[in-house]
Image (cartoon, rainbow, N blue to C red; front, side):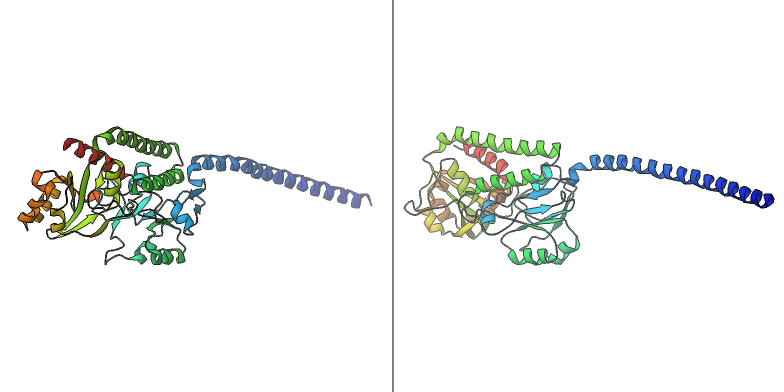
Amino acid sequence: MKKLLSTVLTASMIVGLMTGCNAESATAETAVVTASKKEAPQETTIKEETSEPKTQQFVLKHTNDLVNAGYADIVLDEVPDRIVSMSSYPTLALYEMGYNDEMIAIPTTSTIHYPDDLKAEFLPGIMNSTFDIEYIISLEPDIVIFPATSPNHIKTLTDSGIPVYAIGMSDMEKKMNTYEYMKHQTELLVEAFGIDDEAKAAGESISQRFATLEKRIEEVKPQFEGKTYISITIADPTNYYALSGAMANMMGMLGWTDAMVDPSKEQSDAGHGMTGTVNLETLAVTESDKILYVASRTSTLEEASKQVKAAQETNPTVWNAIPAVSRGDEIALTSSYMVTSGIQIIETFNNLIDILLETN
């Protein structure tokens, strides 16, 4: 009996020792796991702090006219890393705000000069016969900025699950003139993309440039008030068009009056582009203080002057009968004055003021 009891006690002691060892081992393992779990939140916190600008919710609002047309805000979980813009209008603002790496594709254009170090791929414009909507989808963008004038393309992109921000060329409701609309459009881009300090500072700089321009306009306006002008686009040596939109807007804000416009009829400078062909015989009997030519597909004033000269050589008698031409009160401008893309209107407007002051 003692022998049996001794055996049982010995077995119990062995089991106890084994259990104790296992418990210590388990405790050690638990301690390691617990320590790892305590360290994990530290790593997560560091990552969250590092990537904070990218995890902030991104909200891009549409312009007032497009909101009223039914376009909703673009809301993303984070700032887009892959941006395709098929409008040249936001390109310069996004570039200045530090989104050069994020813009992966933009449209080719002859109306603005892109920065030389722009990294985006250049794609055919939406009016080009080689434009390929499927290629844009294949780029897997986080957002596509697309002209509101192409609703079918916008639907194709949204049906593919891609967020699309519609952007206007001018106010569809005609409540804002071209300058006001470009400024409004830019303010919304600055508000949405101004996430970090660098982008915010760049946005504030853009806003200040608008304010400085407006102050300058008010300062020089008295020198031009009451004067008249004619503005036409030289498409080629034999085709000319009356120019509206940006040019009419800028000249009007400076106090000039369009000599080709019937003052008895309501006019709007909220439009965009050209309004119709121009007859040289009509120009020959129209008195104006200045005639301004915008030469299509030109990027320098020298190119613009050559294109105007080529047009005048086709019919010098009639051209020289135009009062402003006969006096030499004429100005040749590049195609950038035909369409003002986004914040480019600031530079374009300032350059126009410089030229008008020099020839005043």
